[in-house]
Length: 336
Image 1 (cartoon, helix red, strand yellow):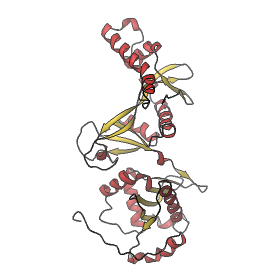
Image 2 (cartoon, rainbow, N blue to C red):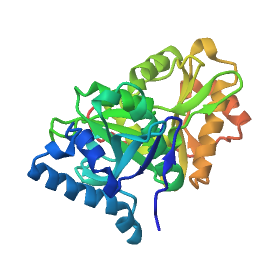
Image 3 (spheres, rainbow, N blue to C red):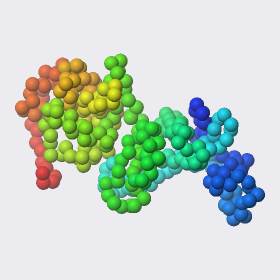
Image 4 (tube, rainbow, N blue to C red):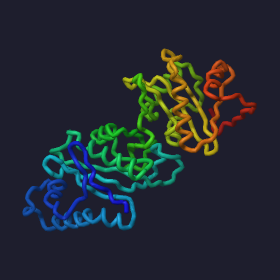
């Protein structure tokens, strides 16, 4: 059965709600400290909610379903319930926010939600609890992706998303009005650290301006498809293969865009900042991409070199690539 254990952090732990948590639930959701002062309708509503929340984890586990539902965020030092957190099935047109193809289809995702009593906000408790649950979902449930949604003006939630390592993506369309910002955390977003202080991480939407500036500096040929819209589509469809090599301070010093068409992989736009070239960074990016494509089951890796950039061929040959005799043809699907 998929029974979630109690998750322990440095200051808080996450556990199921129980029938004994009624007073704590009133304090959390209704800001009432004395249950005797609660109106009968409120008492009935909270009792019903608590009965559902308390039995939810057992009933879902009995049905071998994912451990959805509310769980208590408990301050370990005092055993005080300070919030609620959980996983929930989310259904929406997430392609509009850069998760999968933007084809108008509704998709199901596993969502993360949380709330913390105002008295305990701005102390990092939401972030700590969120990290516990995200790690559990990714590492134990083996979920590919966890999302969280919020509004444009909910800066507190956005701050928690960033601290969780989420890439915050914006709905490209005005509708639906409730789908505004989506925080995305995927298993391959964990950075790969190197002894010289540099690290490789996935490219996120907020990198696009810096990445385009790097390409111009490299210099790299900028294609008509190298627009924020085109690059956003690439991240949505091939995010695990879009990599940035960063300096210790986080500045991007190199990028590579990879993809997997199901039969073979591709390398696109390998670029290293001009003042960081000839340090082995390009090879490091290619090797990281090769590792990810190999892990995904890819058996062959292709790349194209434009005619006026033929001097880079020896570099790729040193990495095991060989010239092929294929002709390259292209057709534009839109006017450029």
